[in-house]
Length: 531
Image (cartoon, rainbow, N blue to C red; front, side, top):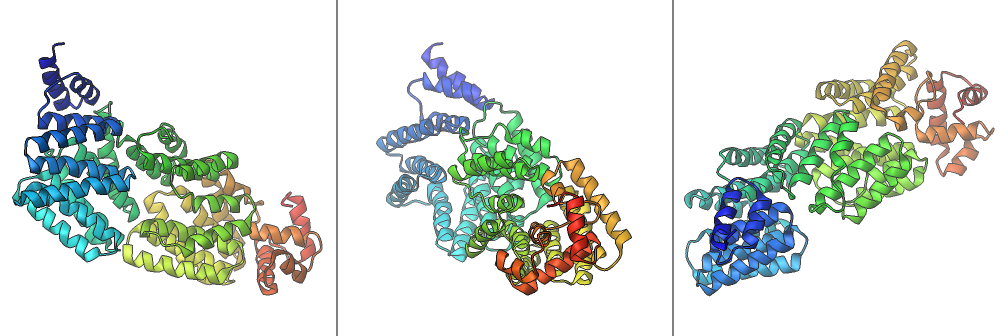
């Protein structure tokens, strides 16, 4: 291939979204103009060759600067800076953005580079906690993008505005902005790089707000977009992780594991690799593969993804109640964005109730209720109702537990979330049994057991001691000590609980096992090999 034809071949490959052929053709071509250098850098980025991308951006910057084209040099510096920031190289990223800002100031015109820099400034304002200022800058960027006929800038600013609003707790407004960004994307006028950025941001925003309908629709659209570009190295990890999240919720656990199999520490998208490891850890935990879960959570932490609260729930599943409680108390003391906070609070309620810390669990439930009011999405509402039911049940108020539990159940059935449905049915079984309605309790328990068996939810199934009911990890600890003949006072001292809390656990055990004495509970425990 002659060198002049290499450029033509690269341009044809780029237009056809054949990124590898475009990159390889550009790599042997000479005398690339500014547009070709931009396409060359984008091809490298889409392949996941970020070091090459940065080198090409720097080459473009130097060439444009030498030609006196300050605006396009500023754009090369802008993208070099923003993509370095996303990659985690904050110092170098800030330096390149400062270069872009200096060139924009030197140029002094109403340029597109000046408008793009407002998006970068909005990032900084949001990081500093200046939400209103960030939104103002993004409003101006959207207006400038429309005035200057730059659809990429419009979509970028709209999608970033949506994420800022979601982080600030304005779910409806944030989702509306993301919808606007997706409308821009649907026109087909966005560049391939910005298309991937907007898809990823929109999906992340949907999950932070637990907006499943949009998440499912946009995940399918992104999957189709990735499928027609087999060379993609960037963005594919995000797509697989989001698909897996949906499948985990819908009970398609084997398919979720398959989606995550190709996303690991060698993936170009470190965020996606970390999230994939975390999701694998949770799926292994739910299916009783505890050693594999330990390894996955360790991998997530190595990749910079917080393994909590999955790791705390794993400790609970392995019987280390106090270790789990210590982990989740630490998580509660930290600040998280709303989506992560919901996950932490749900885990905290389960763990703290198992540890006999009903008062602290009550505080977590209150926070969940507030988040449910703010988000107004069915998933958060169902989680809030389910947690409220668990708290009422643990506090000895089974009659008060039934209404929120049935509310949660209706939502889970509608959403098609079989694991959460099963866990809610177990709460209903416990409440009915405590109220003396054994027939309804057995029916709810049987339905829950069938769901858990179909899912392969071995961790939950292991907590079912038999047809008599469900004991929590803490109740199993108490029962094992009751079986030794220990008094409630001795049990309280052993488990570092109040005697009143132990009294309540013993009463719950009697109700769940349908027995009336410590001797009968002990006999039941040995007969069913619970202890």
